[in-house]
Length: 115
Length: 117
Image (tube, rainbow over all chains, first blue to last red; front, side, top):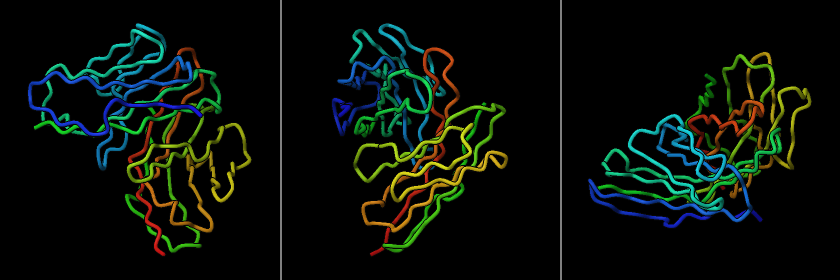
């Protein structure tokens, strides 16, 4: 079974803090994604990476950065957390085989509260 | 840019009954992929069913089936014999064909399904 794990299920941080969200996958997938999930807005892509040290901006990259130093690990960084970044963060990974069989596997999510 | 619309924020169904969740999308592409994902409360998002646009036959997975209407750009999910474990958020998603790297998924806003005993 593919396993995507996220470092924390719940996180409480203060405004201005630097926040690291970690995601690890165990299937040697090349592609990894960070989404933000908010009620009524669905999932919105923040960043994705299709190789080590490679990254591309998604739809809402402002206020976030990412790091992928190893294939299995993809980190999301909030340089200076703000209250409007309170949200559920989902990590996903996939093998870019293409076609309909390419499935994104999701982690359990990290619910971040910024006070 | 592609968009995905789920017009039903919430739906409810009686256990053992059938329910249909709606999804429409907008695209100028002729080939693409469509997905339904399920997110149970406090649990991980999982893939329910997928459909290739060039296939006219509707995909089915046990009690889950889709009604894919390409001309109408509609991709509804039918859940038959609903079970309590079907209660979840359901997301419809669109993906462009593989063009190198990886194409991202475009998600709808979700439909919260409640199953009443």
